[in-house]
Image 1: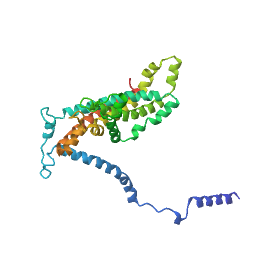
Image 2: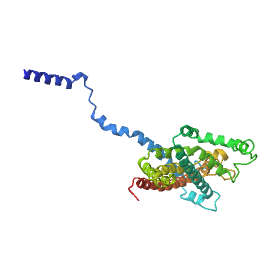
Image 3: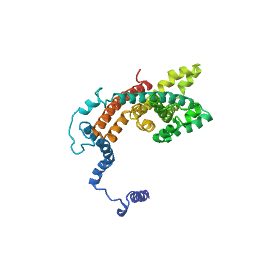
Length: 322
């Protein structure tokens, strides 16, 4: 009897584990299995080519005399374009545009960081108004910067702008040569401060509660807890926001160009706007590519420095570095 039960069990197991030959999936050829990893890399390779090809072409243009006047007789000129825009006596000297770009990037990044951290601290307090404001906060980020700049351009108008009406300062020129850069920074701050606030708020809400509860038991003040506990822990999040905003501000084009077209004069002519004007107004493609190559070098150096500071802040927040 036991042998009969054992035989039935074995036969039922064979029946369950061995499907009929007609129901088995067809075997995948070996060449298809070996080809699959390469097929999966095709999108990544295409993306890399799409990024590197324009960059390499731009680098080549920077060492040529390519312009709209000699499209059929392009020749190599070495570092002549660099000497032209790095020479203080040259009409195309990069100094003023670079200084305006750095001013814009530093002012906008500092203001957005300070205001963003302050807004994040306010929103961290649980209240109905805070929850409502948290939803409204992202509205500037939902508007394209070009559209926002155009709306602010109308508000800045000296004759019929709503800002002068509200402030009672009829005829005040927000976009004069001495104020245009700061007005452009104001628009940038209005658009991107919510980005910093949301990023920092996410960092604050991810912090452990135990250290703060222990400090509250020891009767520590709010300023002490912020300086000694919260700020070191959220510093990596603040640096991430600074990296994103500073890199983006160094490449700024749309806001100052829509507000003033780079003017009045050259008051808001950043490196991007200088390259744009050289390309589409003057047809000096090689000189514009040289501007962009120098801008790329500035962004690369700044990014390396900021990313290194971020790594150090992360290690310090984790307790791995004093």
